[in-house]
Structures are given as C-alpha cells and as structure tokens.
Image (cartoon, rainbow, N blue to C red; front, side, top):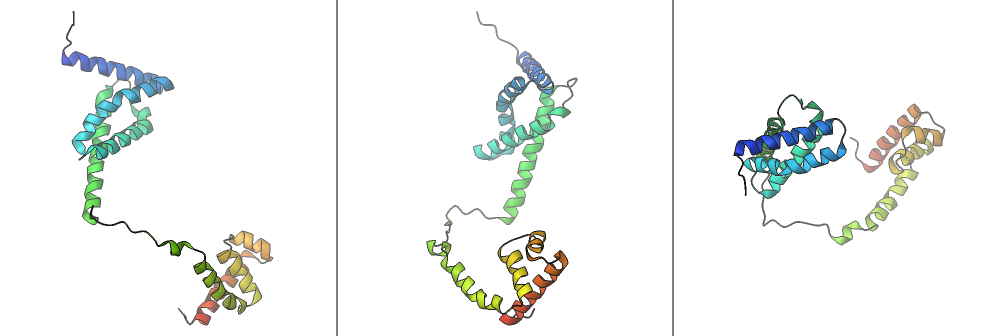
Length: 194
C-alpha cells in the first residue's frame, strides 16, 4: 500500500532534513556538510534556471551559490528556516549573473562565426631575442660602468633593487639614480629624448 504525502508535508520534511544537516555542519560535521551540499544542488539548480539562459549559465549560478553558501554558512541562524535562507542566496547570485551578463553584452559582441587567431610559429622563436640582444650590446657598452651594471641587474636580469644593490656594492638610492641615468642615456643614444 502506497501512502501519498501532501506536498506541504514533503517540503516540511525536506526543510527539517536540510536544517538538521546544516546544524551538524555548523558544529563541524564534514560528512553532514557534504550530504547537505549534495542534497541542495537540485533545489539550487531549479532556482538558477529562472535567472539563466541555457544550462551552462545555470550551472555557473549553481556553482556561485554553492561557493556563497560555503563562505556564509556561519550566518545561518538555526532558529530560522533553512530553505528561505538558501533561496535568498540563490536569488541574489542569479540576479548578479543577470547584471554581469548585461554589463558584458553592452561592451562585447558574440560572433560565433569569427575565427580565432593564433600567432605564427615563427614568432615564438629565439631569433627576435637574439637580434634585440645584438642591437642593445653596443648601446650598453656606451654607458658608464655603474649605469650599465645597474641597468643590467634590475632591468635585464630582473633583480630587486635590494639584490642589485648588494651585488654591485652600491646603495639602493645610488642604484636608482644609475638606472634612471642609464635609461635617459639610452633614450638619448636612440634619439628618443622624451
């Protein structure tokens, strides 16, 4: 014999079950928290579809809601119903998604027929870097020794000011001055006095 439950009774049982899992999760029960998250996904998904066009967008909202629930789970008051709290979070995340999509659509154009472009394989080789190094060597050689060392250490080798100062024996302030003068000298040598 099958006994049919009234829809209100089923919702009340669901509320009680989820509230119990959330209470246990707030007390630190990881297993209850995992059960709760698995149980609420279909409910969240049904709410997310109201705010999304397409399954992918709805799943993005579901993920946003789950992350939000995780971040704010401590704010749920066990004396209050769980489902309205969860529904409010889902509604806010869904509305945020609509707003974000509207902002993006105002500035971007989705063209499915557009071709994706890729750099030619020749652009990812070392010859450009070698050519640049060959061209800059004479310019660096024209700089005074302290300026050249400061520029090479900070700009070419990527050392921090403190590391370059320690390596060169200069103070950080002197190193900054030498880098500035080196850049200015290079601009002058290149004819870019700016």
